[in-house]
Length: 186
Image (cartoon, rainbow, N blue to C red; front, side):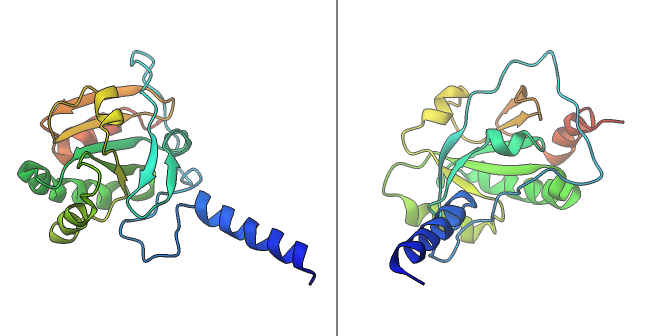
């Protein structure tokens, strides 16, 4: 193979990995789902306002635009910080929700720790067995767009990109599930 096609192939592989949210380093968080889940369809909430965009970098370095995810399934955003004791307590609720709904939803943590606090964030993830992807928001752009004053806060976005509900202080699995039930097409 000549040098030019080999470089093109290497570039293509790198692009695919970047778009998939992968990196050459060991991943520190779960991978976001791709493609619509099979055997289920969802309805939007036409009374809900459009959700602010969520674009940023995952803790493992992958760039993500959550609009591509919420086009296929509802997304639960959990606004967190490593110093937040209530966030740690709510992780069990998120794990329960994740186990119950599986690929039918995506749960993404939006971490508001400042730049340079990656070690604190990783310690929080390890200590609380966080299995969902973690998006870094050190400048609090996403936090401000969702009017987050303090973690935890939970947001639910439907497949139409509507902000269905915000729960200041977070929400338990049963409360979130009751909202998700209204978004499943019957």
